[in-house]
Image (cartoon, rainbow, N blue to C red):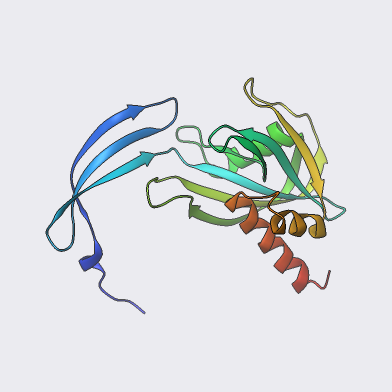
Length: 186
């Protein structure tokens, strides 16, 4: 079903950088709306990121528990990280899995790419399913502190239900995993 959507497009007229950080840039953009009126849009420019649902041979997933200053709380998440400039997402996913969990995977499947907060940010996150894991060496960044958790399907579902897992990318991947397990009769 193809239809013309040109009547929905906002035309950017101007962009002012108001902040440049170590990996994000914040801009205020002036746009012309489809009705001809002008509006301002605050936009966070982000290099993109990856996340990995790593499934062990005993059918558990690897999650990380770490403090996230933006939320001012500990969050349980799938291993994740930002893309380096020009980096291939799969290369980044492999690096992040090993750095954060100390595991490597022989099998990789791209799950989905999605915008994390399209109302104000252009961050595109690439998610992967990793299987056939082998223990390697955890190699955290100097400013990274986390615990690795091995979680069963039942535990993961309960953690989402009771709010211990409140991260959207992690919830999406867990529910995909639960659906796949149900299809397989597990």
